Figure 1 (cartoon, rainbow, N blue to C red):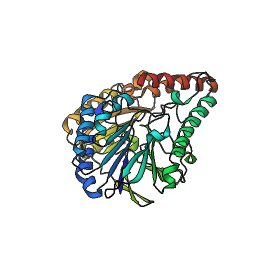
Figure 2: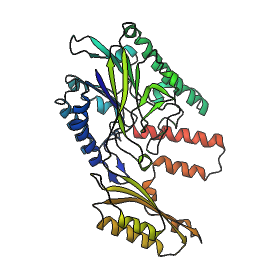
Figure 3: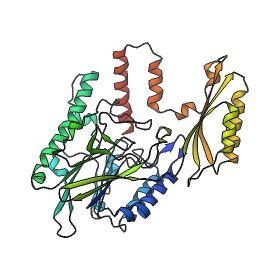
Figure 4: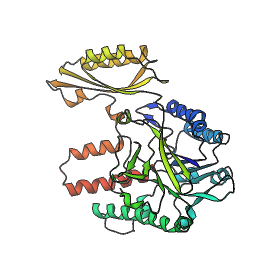
Length: 409
């Protein structure tokens, strides 16, 4: 039996103000037309963050449902999907009963009883359960913490972490009867794990990494494999070979531009489980170019690409001496290049600075800078300019992230 593990698609995401719709579509086409015929998986696991927003744009919903409909003729017998922190559990679960008739299982909210999570993956020959999957969605901190407890940084962190660990322990306990029968258990999750390498595009909704759990939350004796989402770089957790983030299938920020994206393919024979990474091809280059105006202009003029989609660029221009017309010269270059070389690249963002004769801050700030920042970035920048104590600063961060989560959800 073969099982494909993926996560963090973030359908509907914009990089700065530019859509990644074409990137996602090329991935979905590759998955159905190349990956599935080559790997011949029986089951597909998607561990959260199907969408980038709780209320995704219409085109992203269309991509999602078109993909599911195409799966019906692809030879995959079962699909199991969990909600991530970016997803709306209610929206994902709305067609749950209909999709279940098609062997597509959606878990948007966590049931109290861990036994209610388990989904059997059956052998083709005798229909006996060959694997049991427990699809745990993103566990929100307000569902895990006790009401009325003191709102200190330490209390919040400990309560979230202990709540996550307690839930996974209940699932492990509920899975004992299957383990005793020699049936492998796979648990899905969407969370921060200690030691995971993160990039710019992962939002710290659970108050930064306060809810991060250690690898011992997923003991090997309880779970044969842990299929995680939330971190976009493919990686194991704390060198534990049975705990893996599949990573996002396409780069979602310039900080991910050098990552080799992949899916995780599990092959199960009896009670033996083997994992291998399946590389996802790159459909678009994300490039950062820096230097003075003349050198950057030369590199832009000579830039070529060999990917299906035009490259997306970030520019960092540094001049030695301030001149009041320099900002206009840079903007003119950007506009010209975006028009004349649009088949090769598109400049999404640029910034510039001067090493001498510093002008006022307003003269140095690129017009696009604010648009490129996340809400949390702006708040953090403001805190960094304040004279708050460390304790008050942490209290502000906790309150801010709680308000942000309530607004986004």
